[in-house]
Amino acid sequence: MAPDGPLVLPGETIDPSLVPSHPKNPLRLGPGLRHIPPTDIVPTVAGQLITNPVKNSMWIEYNSNRYIPSPNDLILAQILRSTTDAYLCLITPYSAPATLPHLAFEGATKKTRPQLAPGQLVYARITPASANRHMDPELECVSATTGKADGLGPIGVVGTTSGSGSGSTGPGCVFDISLGFARRLLMARSREDGGVGVLEMLGGEEGGGLAFETAVGRNGRVWVGSESARTVVLVGRALQETDRAGLGMEGQRRLVKKLVREMK
Amino acid sequence: MPREVDPSLNEKQFVTQALEENLRLDGREFDQYRPLELTFGEQYGVADVTLGKTRILAKATAEVTVPYADRPLDGIFTIATELSPMTSPSFEVNRPTETEVLLSRLLEKTVRRSGALDTESLCLVAGQKCWSVRVDVHALSHDGNLTDAACLAVVAALRHFRKPDTSMDAGVLTVYTPAEREPVPLSWLHSPFCVTWSFFGEEGETAVLDATWLEEQVRVGSCTVSLNRHGEICQIAKLGGTPVNAVVLLQCTGVALAKVKEFDELVDRRLTEDLKRRDKGGFMAELRAENDR
Image (cartoon, rainbow over all chains, first blue to last red; front, side, top):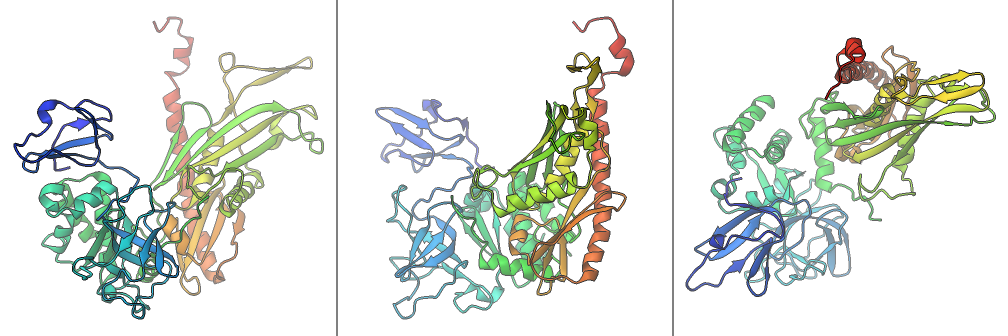
């Protein structure tokens, strides 16, 4: 992993010298930390403690197996069935379904709403309003402020007309990855901050300029689409192997080269 | 209990489409198994089989009981298969799913009904005392192809197992502890293994070995062949699904024989290694008078 910070265990006391101090900004605690008044800050999970002195924030970087929905997360959901005004979607197996209103798509009205079949994949965002983790989450495929889809929406399946944008690349396939790896993939600078360069390498020089598109869900699923099935399999295997073995930059480069040679 | 969710439409379409282009999601050949690992536990009769992400633990035990009244000369041999919610949340305790029933039935037919274990050798006193050998199969992780992994685990566990030595003296049966007398292996006649083929395509023209869980959910049919390394077929089970051409099935049994030979070799090799590990310097070390301390 790229970020460096001390490893902490749940309930450990955090060295006060590690807590950032800023003259003006209040201290912000991120995932995995809990404030016990008046003065204690206690980690609730095991992981790396990361601090950001500029934003005056601290959080714990960890890899867990169970996804807990939180607002504004981009996720890859699967339609279960349709009710009168919403689709019921599955974010993780064996958990309560999330609702995706029929009108939460770009330009959707009662007459033009997309018809989605059970089993179809949707790239969606968890609405900022569904902040309560004890309630079923709500999803949206459109930005509430701009009214644009911004790349969200159903992911195309051959033989249906509802695919928006991605329909041309065929069904693509979904691969399971760990939650920490999904987070690293979704970072704005995934190469520098997350230490993941495998996608760039596949599309760049090492992979011989493969053409593919991806949709990474924070729920530990990544969709890979391409016109050639060979590319989809290659990209999926590269992602899963990078995740499983925890490869660094050099390891990822070697893996990409090996896979490209193998699947020629 | 939550129901198992079907894979998404995208995955279903892609798996079949990729198979038409001779591709599998993990880059394997059609007749290639995932990495297969077999380890034995500290105790006799514990075998742990890992097949990719599928993991099976089998444990063999033996106790002295009364034989069945209608078979006074035979010992008792049972295989207990139970899929717990640990394997997958959709499995429930005491409510066997179809997968579980089929798995135990196939193991029964392959190992028990093919006479792999000589049950007559388990008889101690005719009609009064016999050994009851029981194998418990635990699925620790389910990523497809439970049958092949479970069958391998059962066979390996039974071949690794040692039951306490006994003697009959003037009508008195004595069961010796391992400290008194070295435990004895079971009388094992042949090692049958399961090889499961999954069929894809309109008429099941694509046959694939060792399907993962995703492939198992998409396949149109499957066929389990059980045979030993001499090519003696113990059973063939094709339970429903799309009809498959007889020629395809014949080719499948041919490949299955090659795979079974590999399995047999693996079990033999691991058993020899385990024996070597347990053997602390042979007979001379045992006879040595000096103490470890």
